[in-house]
Amino acid sequence: MKLSRTAWLILGIGIFAIAIGVLGWVCLQQVHERQQLDNSLSLAQATLPKVISERADLESALAQATSLLNAARSGFPDSVDSIRVDEKLFDIAKSCGLKITKLTTSEPSDEEVETVTYSVASFVVDVKGEVADILDFINTIATDEYFTNTTVELVNIVVPEPLTEKEKRGLTEAEIADREKPSATIDLIIYGYQGE
Image (cartoon, rainbow, N blue to C red; front, side, top):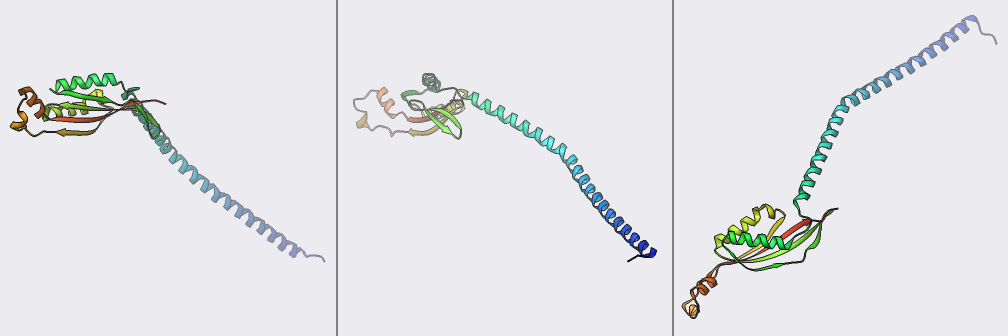
């Protein structure tokens, strides 16, 4: 079967129209994809300085946190020197007008807090003197630079009743004053940094 020239012409125009339509559709798809890529690229370019800035801020914050951690670690002694602590406590008691009547120290032990291991020693100090002096002693320990790694765990202040005349018999004035003097028991915990 032979097609006429008109049929060939119509068939050719149809094929050409289909080819043009397909090419146009492909071209439109590529234009659309290119617009999406351009938008994504513009968004990435706009976001990049912010990400770089945030990274710099995070690195700065990390450096600052590391510096603070190192400073905090350096504030802790490597271990608790009980002899030095005892001397310091006696010095403070003397400057506050108190008498240390008993001082006990525990053997340092290790205590882990999260991932950090500390050397921990406890001290129990019994002092005698006026209540204001006892409070001054506690305040000095709490604020003294030497005791920055110390926690005052417990304070028990006892103010005795005045002795009766019967209780005073046979005692000297010094003995009476000593028995009527307030006293306190102070529990301290001192931390030392063990390191990595």
